[in-house]
Length: 235
Image (cartoon, rainbow, N blue to C red; front, side, top):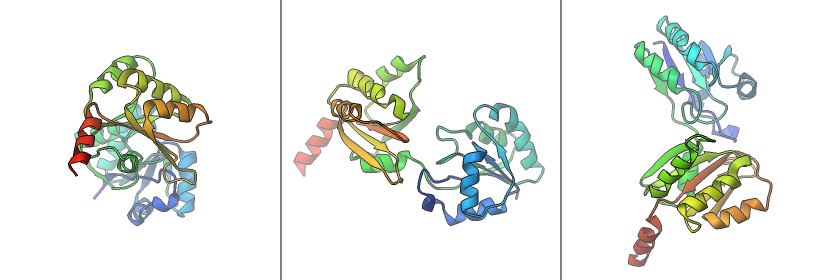
């Protein structure tokens, strides 16, 4: 049956591509890619020879309806992004919504996404968490930070290496310098790093070095340190 298939791709290490993902990409009629130049390297590595078409934040508003129509007429189309699972801080939502409106089947494969390994290896509570993606760069940023200060669940943020220290300084200001944070960088890659400490310690650590790579911030929820400490004492 014709459908839209969302296919996660490795966030760094090419060995994280699943057998099923490779098989399905070899079977579809068309692959939609966030950046065809980036995705062509992945497809070449796995000898996948299927036509590609660009599908990104700047054109998905205009192409989603047409793509859904093509699937409705019998094509099976896959959507991939530069890294990770489509729709998670990447293009995908608009196309999925349009396909559902058109009565087209949508399937998402399980696979790589950056925030799950970051959360699990952070050492912070992960039974309840909230994913915020990227903070607003300008409008609404201060409002968002004030809301984060009151959030009791573990919080997950994505950040650019160029804005990391600024973001950590703002978290220290609004959430408190002693709020615990894990900064996960270059997950699954050769120079993977996870820094665990307070916001103040993280600012000091990353201010003293050149930061590169993709960043995931895992931030302790309000009041959780006391709760975790009490559990430790009971144990």
